[in-house]
Image (cartoon, rainbow over all chains, first blue to last red; front, side, top):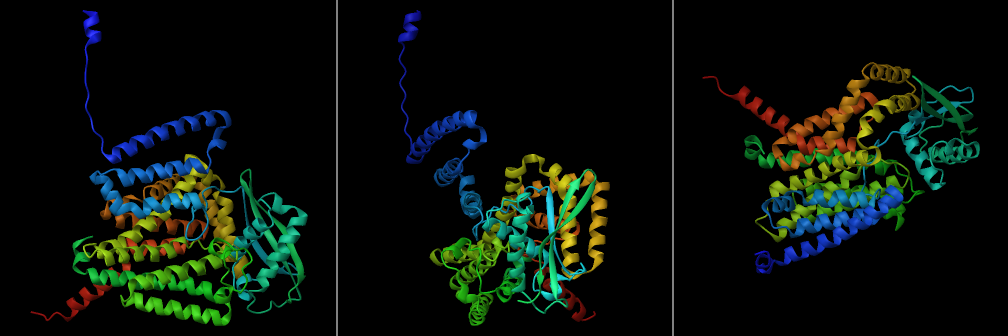
Length: 215
Length: 289
């Protein structure tokens, strides 16, 4: 009785369309890739997540959209294809206009800074009154200067030699935007940094440039 | 879209175009006029070529003239593929040049909005059954939703679900920076006093701020719902506008290249103002029976 059951034969007949074959093949490759990634994740942790991880997800996602014939997929193709294409491209390419991963305030640094211009007696000179810019824009330029000089954020930028080098370049850029000359012979450019200590916000002024106001 | 919008589809589209060209021109013309002929930190396409000659005085005149011509044809609904592509290209060059001077205005969407519209007109050119009136706006909505979703995804990738709690903790110093920046720029101590008052308010309502930050993150991540359910577009527009007003109040920052296009394409306030005036005029001039 047992032998007869084991000898019983079943036959199957099935056919697959081209999109199903391609999708099955992709899923097999993806499964092998995922196993490989899990192995390396267990060995080296999140360092295993590299550009090919995002690329594999992107390629698989896009091929799903292109291959699946269902009505909701057709809806996505028709109504959301630009979003579905643009978001992964931005995440892959990063900051290169017109692509951006919009990372502003995605994490908050433990310090924040603004820029202040004073005369030689430390009286404030309103930046926007004499230059066609704003303290906030000086902050953006500061970041670009640091990146250009390979100075990586706090506390590197606060080191004495870096502060002077950055201040010189920043003030030179500021002078290019002069509307009228400030009513003083010499100016001081300060970086005012705000940090959180206990329950208090403390501010610290760092002198970045001290020199004549003329070009 | 609602029955009012369907009835006045052409006016709706014209109001959208006028509003967006106005906002875009304000930002772009400011960038052109303020640009120097230097390109110290080339980024994006400026790494291939700096386009510095375009930002000399004669170059600026040529650039502004090209922008004016392309905008004119766009508003007149003539040569739409050419005008939107030209505006996308010029927008990309100007914004990339601005970023190459170390000034990040977060103006990513401004160029992509032109490109999205050009895709719709190109599709219509090759397929007359293509619903141009729907998709020339819907493609732009997709781009705007993508921008907000990217903001949410970046928060998730950098800070995970801890972002609301982390932000509430460190927000006070970034708030102070925003208001202090205005004090140092304009010399009015009222900005600094306001900053201290807002920071004080945050410390008194810490939990409420955490909740608001969490809600803003969810709003950004679910922005695609404005595409899936077009009826939700106005709701998302209103919610995102409140979020931007909250950021303006607490941090003294307005991300105008995001906020204004979103308000225009999600809510189109100019259309309702125009219709409101037309209806009011009708009521006033209606003869008394």
